[in-house]
Amino acid sequence: MLWCIQLCPGEPQTILDPFMGSGTTLVAAKSLGIKSIGVEISERYAAVAVERLRQEYLPLFNEPDAPLAEPPELFTMEDTQ
Image (cartoon, rainbow, N blue to C red; front, side, top):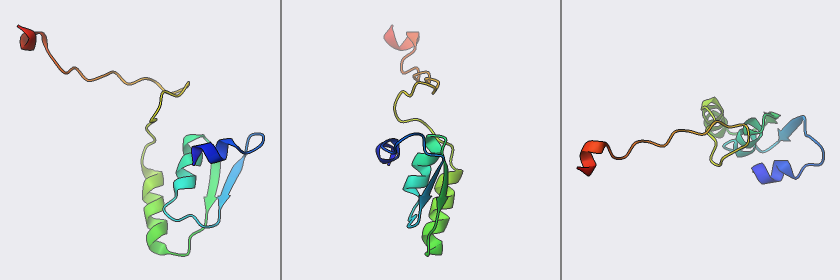
């Protein structure tokens, strides 16, 4: 959904998703720092969306403002001797 939001002309201030489902559009808007409003008739799907939005956003790709994570150390010097 990121690509879809990024196709919007100008800089969108708020995204409205009248059929929110599990909240994919709202999660994408959150990752871009855009306000969003979701409407869902099913309480089960709304609960899933709320839980997804509560989770901290971790960038999938190297984004310009995102700090790069240090790679885990896979081997120690003792392993190589």
